[in-house]
Length: 408
Length: 227
Image 1 (tube, each protein chain N blue to C red):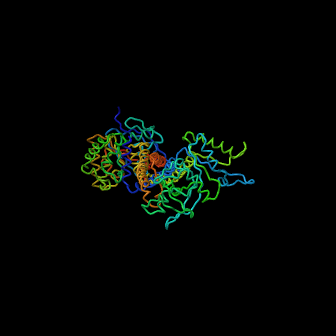
Image 2: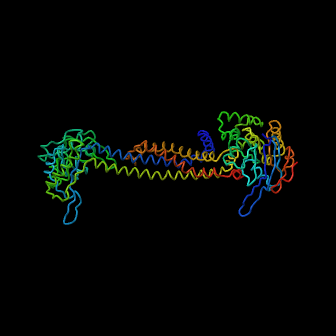
């Protein structure tokens, strides 16, 4: 028997009981759809994270304080740090470094008119837009003289504009209060949108770090320093130069531990991508379990079907079907069932992934249907058919023709 | 080439049912010439069904030799026997044994599916075969829409499809009324007389057996009488 004849015979048998065929397929349909939808959520998260990091620039580095020994106990890393503005200025002079921006972070209440908003206030340097690759949508950023003079000026994120100002109102030139101190709004950042499930990236205000230290945080140490290397390839060199410089400046002995950490964006991006990759694998494997259950459903129905059709098997054997013919017939039925379920499941899975964003609860989830997951789900459902169809098919082919013919 | 379609040499068949040994056949020898029409008769338990299964290549004898068309088939494999059933033997059963919820035409073409015949030729030959048993116009009827007599004709059409040398009929009229039985026997007689197909039929009804050319009577696994 050639393939088409086997297929024709099994399709005919399946079409004799359409309801059962559909219900058997349903297990595979749900399994395949779940795999595709879940993997698409995972890939979507990964793509969002990747694009977020790409938009920050790959030559970006962060210098922050490390843990320190305090009488034998380690402090929380970054909490007790000795990074100073002078450290930042020294780093700016290094050959592989393009620009720096010291960073002082605090939270504050903003007030404008009758509206108020709690947000993150970042004290930064004048090169912040360059270091962070973040453009200004309206107005301008503060310059070096304003930073030196500790001017009370700020540049607001897109979310702040939305929350403090009326629609259509131009924030540039207005005065807002940050922790009761009046600040002049110089400009508005371009929107960068969601950060892959970690909240909006536009919800913050930038002020000169000098102003932040004097008026908002009342401290003389900065939290961290954002550094951009002259190119992505020079990041490693810059990292080494910064480490050497800071060890000398902080007078750390040869065998002492760094009291600072230099991390580059590529490393952070890798870590995040790994985390979302694990998420994808996790979601995918949970969904595969339902595919496995669907496969067991097929085996169950095929076993019932063989028992129900013992007489048919006897008839087929009596008129010349060989063991192989019977085996292939029942195996083909199982494979047709699972592939049919696979195709419908792919359609359903893609549909669910595309429609997910229209459901309010899931609207923040980005999905990405990858062809590899579609192919994988299809191949998996096919192998489920072969694997779970083989036992019932073999059972059918080993029946004794005489007993099968007499079976009532 | 000999003219014997069937030659049986001292066939025995022993079944084991639990601890007990059932000797269904205890040394059966016979020769059935090509073109013969033989009725195997006997009470239930006489071994006639066992003999029929062996002649039909559905079962193998415990000992002895069986030549079908001068080919020793007592030693063939399961799949080889399937091939013989497909090419040389047509079966007609008491319970018709048609596929349920399947059209007459699809039932009839079934043997050709296993003989690797093209779809077009299968349909043509199945139609011709149905016409030969007087069922023209009933091709697309499902088996459960046909009467008993019609179902048995479909079964005969299926048996005839591969132009077999031998038709084996196991109580072919057992489920039919006497008028329909008579019609079915007419079909068998015509096939035997006009087409020269050898027929071996198992029956316990004397008037049906009387329509055959020769009768073999069995009792306790042995042939006791021929007439």
